[in-house]
Length: 320
Image (cartoon, rainbow, N blue to C red; front, side, top):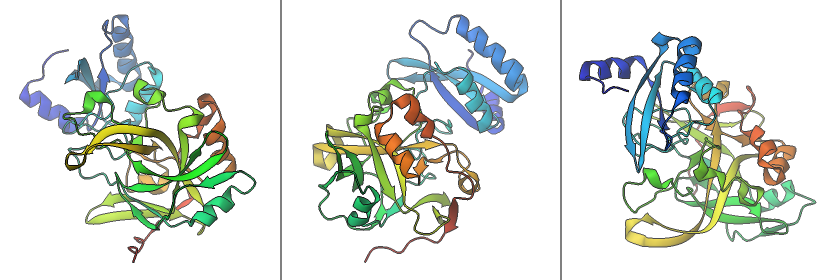
């Protein structure tokens, strides 16, 4: 790996807009480097990628792979699943397809925003026949922003419970620049050791959503079910009693936290946001699978909602 000259950096930054940061293994890449170079040259093509040093994150060195298209980056990561991605990295221009959805302190172009108007009684009725305890108190309908409390459905040990939790899971320590942890709102790389501990059924949850937004010039584009009234949930993960500094003025707080998974976009979302969309489930069988199945089965739900099941809609009104 060689240090790029300034002219070369400018050429690569323009030609290869999709960049993936990968942690260098403690013992180095060894022969894996040759295999990776050979795969890239034969499958992607020498003119369609670039390989450079990616600086240092925490105690780990990184490499940066540059691609022309998101599909090429995804194909590489699929071919080499043992590569450890530097999730949450906040570098100018970093646009890994596996960067957690909406998580970049240096990029305001990604919107974290959804709307939730399903009543508590309606949620309970969706799981009729299953025991569910409502511990959420009063759940006001309306828009949900990062770090706010919102309803989730999770396990309570014997059955299900409806509670409120704070949007944003603990960040990987390597990406934190200060003691403050604003949280990761969305998760894509399920092979990351940081997320692996929370992938069992005990930490999975359903996040009720009525509509969600993606940024467009001058505002947001909202998406809702094409068939009005279709109930839907984000596939979420949660942790309870986590102590951290979310806001400096508040100091340390102990909170129940959640985030939801993302995946490649379907046709409707791709027209606005070509890199990712939340993992959305509308089938009750998928809700049960996500809450109860082994991760080897549940992870298959990390997929786009089929084309045609979402509609582009106007922004929901603000709650009065």
